[in-house]
Length: 165
Image (cartoon, rainbow, N blue to C red; front, side, top):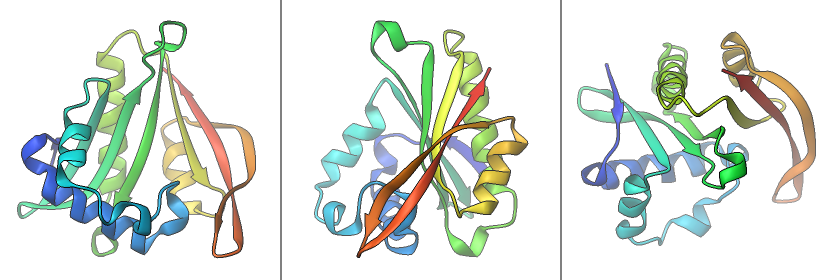
């Protein structure tokens, strides 16, 4: 298994996994499959070239099986903060430590950036395995966003978490 930063040439694999994620776990993302399914591949390529974001991918036998994005705040007053977004591991590979490796890679990158002092993320409150993973790295809950997402009439709360580096 290999973990590395994704680049423009990974756009098609990333886009396919992103659509899978939006279908498989719609409650885990602010966006929806219906919103993203017709995006042009150039949008994904541009996302992978964004200098304020690092998209990490986990590969098994050259297949992209997991992703996690580290995005830094670009405003001067908030440049000490970064966020973890769009975490996903395809179901066949869950429970094998891939999510842990992705989070570890993102934290190491944030520390390498030196100016980053805080990492933030949001996780659906009933996603116990993800919350345990983040807590194992020292993330702490600092709030609950009630009814953060609404999917086909059902509300989902999100835990707001932070890690001080």
